[in-house]
Image (cartoon, rainbow, N blue to C red; front, side):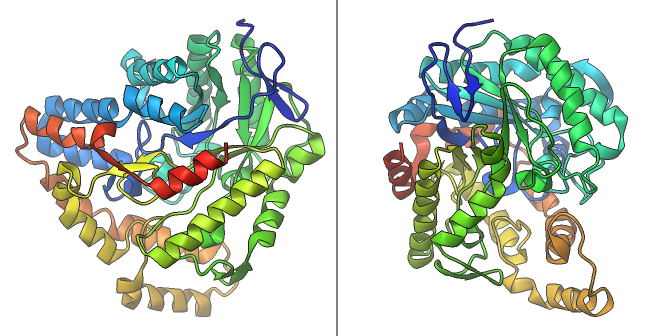
Length: 459
């Protein structure tokens, strides 16, 4: 064991000298687990990858994604995060980097190449990292961000998938167990266990498996229903932090005025705090550290709306500070929706993708980053039919409106756009690919100075 590995002590996180460490930082969304609204593709990551492989062939396909991973986060990015006072970077990863579905339990060493690199870059800047398994085999939730092409979470129903996750975490624990700059392991992002029956038994199994190899690093265990519910927990475990996600209604793409009505609910700062206190009740009752693993508004480029969302963020950060919460905002880098930094509008990547981005916006296919204004003639009859024929239907996790959006917008309308997306890359040379991916380098990106200023002031 390294004496410098972070531990928990009551409601605090402490270092090897017993000094309190408050973790403030961001998530590296869209990197080793890609998301459609972050980099611009439609549907889910694996579908995107297969579409690009078809037009580029295997060798250029490998170059395409290797350059993306290299340029998306480099030394300049780590230095920038340290310069604004951050001491934490949460690293979402997709299991597919480390294991193929056709060769389960056979781990791929090359999958660790960029993960090792970024952990080391952050350590050089005295930035801790949390390894976050964001996409599990069989899909732990019903959404695109677990690389799920459906709206079903099969992980909880198949021991095969669970066995593979235990095997992968054993390998991760073995590799990093002595690394003091890893704050800990976040084994499952946003679980979506429909019946809430398997999440605790699996956490118990996973806890024992990891602790048999690495007894020291903190485990960050997320609540059910996408890290918002903790009633199924009945006991606390040593060096374990129970992780909440705290997205605010007025911060969503379809959020209303703040203070004001969003999705039928009135929200002001008092409501933000009430929601936070409800979501963190288990941590406060058990006197364990509070960790907000994700939060943060989206910004639409309209000054009045964005000003209100910046105020949502300021209010949330003040609430977190008052309640001594650790946090990581979502997300660090994207193409201009939530990121602290983003690809420049005139970058090669953005210019190439523009026709697809316009089509995605027109059809509202990214429910996180787009609205359905131009497809109401499709959505409204479906919504009315369900209201009439199935008035009591309330599917997990977030009801019928959520489910219609996922099935119609994120799947049915999104998947055909993959053909348009892939066609953009047909015939590209290796130099063309390298030039495109340089769009994600820090030196070529733009910065959201208002967002950065708010976060810097909160340190």
